[in-house]
Length: 282
Image (cartoon, rainbow, N blue to C red; front, top):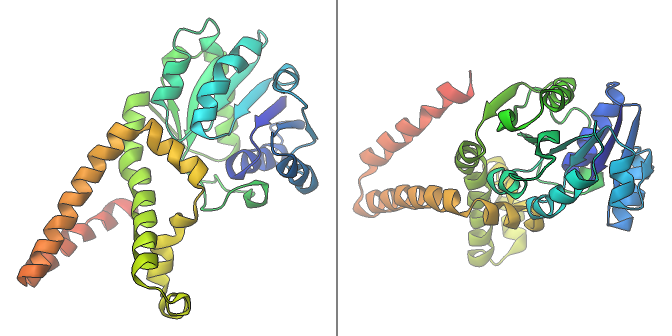
């Protein structure tokens, strides 16, 4: 099995490291437009070689993994499916799915593609952010599996099992709705909190000295790549807006209780929020 990974950043690099280390593939071919990133990927052993062009990367591989920002996946996927040989499987690591799936809905080679999203990551980006064991015990979602050839599906399922990821299956539209709630709003919250503190607290040293573990953990995601996340929000705008509306309603409720001195009501809201522990601690 030869695997080509297009995009050698956090996700693509981490996938490459573990697939090679765990024996899923004998060779990783990288495709990376950023020359500095390509050099770092070779230096770190993320890729065994760098393909000079996309056709070269596809032609050499049994499995092609697209691990670039979602708008780039939408642009590249039809080309990759056109280039793919009879037995070549194509998958992606995109954080949104509906737009990607729709971009190849009528493609003659659609069955070679498996729409996927490993629910793992950190706030860092680039080849230096790639980690071994990043995906262990995190969930991988496969969307619209009925649109993929059974052989292609089997290979991608095997890849995720090699990464030690439990599998969930759902429709692409359902995926985008759920990830808006459990992933995308978390990033917006972190970005907005960081902006708020930077706007109101002008002393950098004060922020550094007073920031506790709680603040640091809450704004950690604000270090995430704007290039990646602006495209995620673009592709999932309607779902994100729906979540934001609900979030703003809850913030307004908190503000009203605080302004009116209804601290007992605030305590009740916090107690309701504590119920999330029963879900997360399972």
